[in-house]
Amino acid sequence: MAPGAFDVFSALLIERSGFDAVYLGGYSVAHSAYGLPDAGLVGPMEFIEVARRLVSQLSIPLIMDLDDGGGGPRSVYRAVSAAADAGVAAVQIEDSDLSAGKHLPGREIQLKSMDIAVANIESAVRARHRSDIVVIARTDALHDRGIEDAVDRSNAFLNVGADMVYAPYLNKNLIDAFVGRVNGPVMHTFGGETEHRPSGQDLRIATAAGVRLVAYPANTLWAAHRAVARLLDELKATMTVPVEGYEAGTMEWFAQVVRLSDWFPELEASE
Image 1 (cartoon, rainbow, N blue to C red):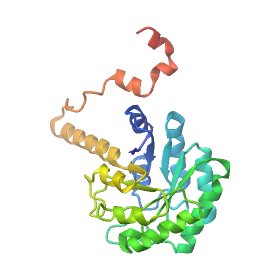
Image 2 (cartoon, rainbow, N blue to C red; image 1 turned 120 degrees about the vertical axis):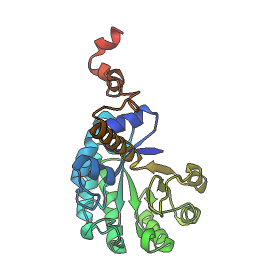
Image 3 (tube, helix red, strand yellow; image 1 turned 45 degrees about the vertical axis):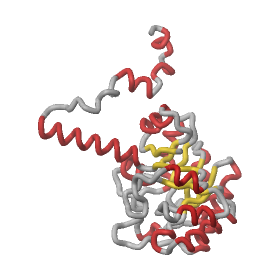
Image 4 (cartoon, one colour; image 1 turned 90 degrees about the vertical axis):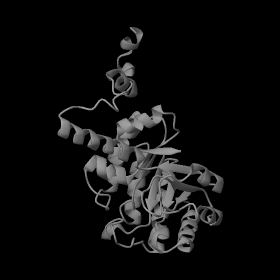
């Protein structure tokens, strides 16, 4: 399991909670780090700059979303190389054509041609020569084209060296069929709010189907930002800071999360 982080502090909380990996999604980075919609507006190098800050403080692996890696094979090669140099453990490259915007309401998702999508994954795989970074190939074919196209694209990506594949919008009625027909490891995500990715799906369904990695890309972002919005609404309405939800918000707790004693060991010795 890899819960999603949206900044360094949320990543440290994931590590502190005992999880084995952190997922850094493009949706979370676009919204939290740049205040932009997740519509192809943030480039791969901007994503990697955020990832670099997380890696510098984590002792568990970081899996990061690189969208389409910049569009073409050379851009993908550069982006994956830079992610590897930043210490990222795994990158996710998708086959959506982001030149027309990404996942815009009411619009069909545009996919890159099979040839370009495969070439991009080949470039990502070639970029591993400097590290053992894992390449996760994502296809959005399931959204508008169906499971046949999603399976075909996933197997094509695996055939050129992808380590794992991911098909969002895969619901519990399709997961067995997809995993059973794909010739390699599958990643799955939970926590979406569309009819294709309903919240509340059971982790056991995925693991029973043979899914190897489960990520929760934006749940921490939603929880944190909704909590902040509620606090601000109450503060505006009552001019009082609510007490509820502050049980863990002590200076001591924050100091533990950011490992203050690593910087000032004499503080730990004096306790």
